[in-house]
Image 1: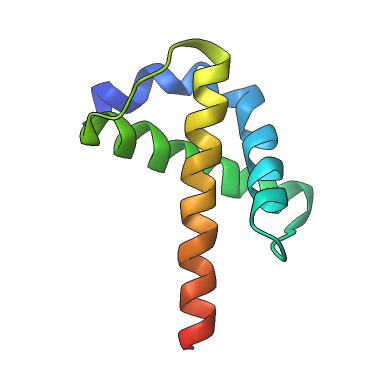
Image 2 (image 1 turned 90 degrees about the horizontal axis):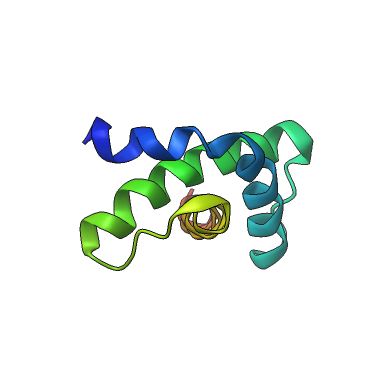
Length: 88
């Protein structure tokens, strides 16, 4: 499991801010500020880099693949947070 996630960590630095910001735009109402977007991007990158290759969907190389994977992972994270907020 760690071997799959580790290669993405090299490309994760610039993509975390971008992916957290993009996810905040895609999922309306979830602006967490700069630090919050970075955290959402990091968690989203871990979700995306593990979930999508595990499901056999894709594993895009390079920075565009890392941004796309991290953004979709962050969108999933924000969707789950939204569901938890509605229930609570």
